[in-house]
Length: 414
Image 1 (cartoon, one colour):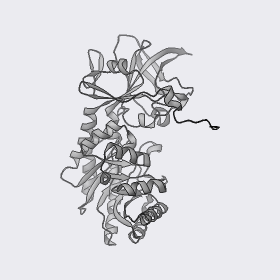
Image 2 (cartoon, helix red, strand yellow):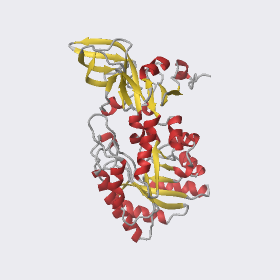
Image 3 (cartoon, one colour):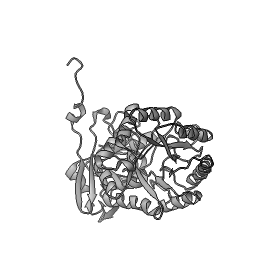
Image 4 (spheres, one colour):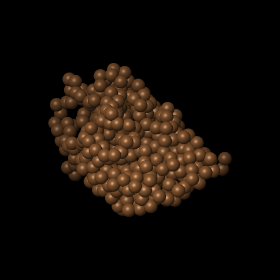
């Protein structure tokens, strides 16, 4: 996706300096080719098996990103009514949409049932009761899979590890059989599958395999109780390379999981998000000032934690490189934003050539959880988004203006 040509950084066949000059900075830039190839790797990994790849929309909900994946046959994994709205607007088939999340409201359940989604991933018995009640009132049948917590440590950051015993997610493993027995007796509920998602940015197949072993054991117990499941959904969570990780391929993930389910003849569902869009995106910023304070170098840029919060929130590492290589001396510096927070940084202690004010830096692997987690903190409008397709440059979301910051506000006395 990214490569230097005569010391200038390109995305596909487009100079990132050209993008920055045309659309300004900060700006998110996505490679259509990388996005599509990442999706196809998952689809091909499950070739020959009944399967559905449901893109985890929370990673990046841009309309064009969603449309490109729809054209490849993707389904959608959603976690809110807003993500359902975006998915339907983009054109996802309702029967390719699965709805996860521990806090679905009555209004969201009604919306999903009226739409006719494939199934709900249910995370508590109270949620099951709510879905059943709404389905009965609407005279519909709700297909469900319980999200089962297998108590498997994904060995990832504690904020994105979701499969351990003390996580807020899912039905405890030891309570799952009883939960399924209860659900099977409820009218307007169709017990369709089982769901398991153990975390994000997982860089080894072992946690996936361990979780699959426990889920298959549970599936066989349910089968013995005359509860036959049509779907096995092992979630998402496959990591990408941010620094020096060597994550498994989708094929390696498939080989670690699918053979565990020896007698299963239904449909496998996977829910990749980061692994599809993460390394398809780059975040461009411009250097505003250079500063040395008490022997510490700072490169102050126009992108900030409101644009890309992962370094602040997760202490996440993103490679930062110059858009144009120069012969300037290299120093160790923090790349920081203009927000009035010490935690506003994009990278700490990075070795970079001293940039001139106005020059550009590229923050790599920001296609996932970059724009999706951005905000208007410090009354900073959200960045623009651009899609690169070969030599074509397409603006897919304009930069927010000052007027956008106040567009939905009203004076209380009016």
